[in-house]
Length: 239
Image 1: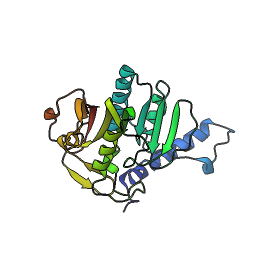
Image 2 (image 1 turned 135 degrees about the horizontal axis):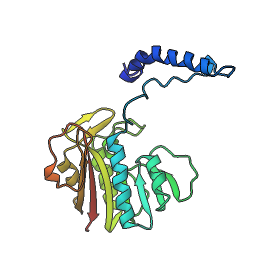
Image 3 (image 1 turned 90 degrees about the vertical axis):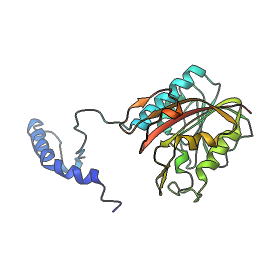
Image 4 (image 1 turned 120 degrees about the horizontal axis):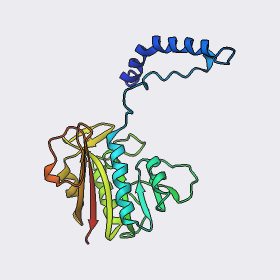
C-alpha cells in the first residue's frame, strides 16, 4: 500500500494526452532524434498555478528575514532543508548538522554529522541556532534514528543547552491536534512547544494555517484549532 500513492495513479489519467503530445512533437521535429526510449513523462505538472509546500516556503522565508535583520557572525542549523540552508550560507557563515551525513563542498557552508539529541557544542556556546520541521521526527525511526518516545523534548533540551545567554533559537514544528503519526512525524499544541524551553523567553510566534495562509507575529493564544499547521517560534535564552 505504501507504493499505491495517489499521485502516480492519478498520472495515468494524463497518458492519452501525453501520447498525443509526443506524436505531435515528432511531427514538428522532422528528422529529429526524439526516441521513445528517451522519453521522461511528467504527467502532473501542467497546472494552473505553481504548487509549493506552504510550511517549507514560509518557514524558510521567515528564518531568512530574521537572520538578515540580526546578522549573526555564525549560524548553526540542525536538520532543516539543506537547500534552504545552502542559500542562507551565501550571506551568513553556516554550520549545518544532520543525522545523515551531507556530502558537499560549498564556501560558507560546513556540514557535520550529528544527532540533535547529542549536539557537539559546549553548553552556552552557540549564539544563533535553528531547526525547522525537525523536532517532530526525532525518535520515530524514519531517518534511521533510534526509537525514543521523548525524542522531541530531548532535541529541544539540547537546542536550549547549547544556546548562549541572549542567543536565539529558531524552530518550527507542526501545530494542531496533538498526535503521533508514526513513523512520519508528531503534531503538537503550541503551548506544548513553549513549555519545552523553560530557560527562554518566547520573543515571536508565527504560523501557517490549514489553508496554507501565513500569519506573521501572532500571540500564541490566537492560534485557531488546527489539524496540521506549522508553528514558527523564536526563543531568546535568558539564563
